[in-house]
Image (cartoon, rainbow, N blue to C red; front, side, top):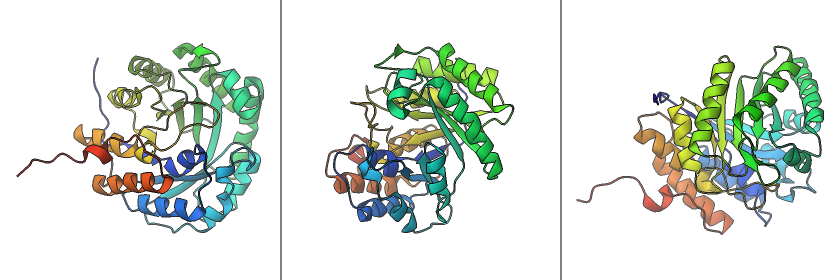
Length: 311
């Protein structure tokens, strides 16, 4: 296999949103703001700070409006928030601090889609077309189409590459040429492996060369970092990650958090791939995250530290 590492990567920090949403305890807004502000000083360029969802489904994020109103802007840092429908988009657009782009979430597992968003694939595809029209009317670039459970889940078992690409094809057909800048493939429930990542990214690139692939990888079964490496070997330049591995998915019981941001950054820097983040500051943030949430977090770099030679 020919290895074609990218020269640089964009690491999107998801910990403040995906991390806190997975916790059983509801943490105060001040705790979230403390972590976000520390992350904003690491050199990371994108931080997903919250999600505009129903408070009765995810009470940990009921403070979304208050949190974004109290953010301290930092030069060079883009603050984003997740939304899943038109109502969530309107809530995001009401903020003067967030940078909002077009985003839509599908799932390769229709059973997961039904459980997570209470809609069938056909219903979700119809909503995709409607949301794309709304993006255009709002002059929002359609930045990201995410496909969750793209390697499988406990409802439908393993999902093969061709099935995922068939959903991408259906989505693109509904969009009538108004394609997203990126399709993000999410291993929501930890069914992915390096070969499956390589196959999916390679096939997607060959069929849709004008759209960038991204990866959103969970480390549920310990394959997360191996899957990152596989993505890097395929030239993927965009990765979602979470400080110290904080997080999980409230609709996927047992799912671990995203791969730890600082661990991914360390791997990239060791391979000569520029990330722009300060690893010492990120280790501080990982330690801070563990302290703030009060539970051990799985990130490795905060435990092992940077490479040093004893004097």
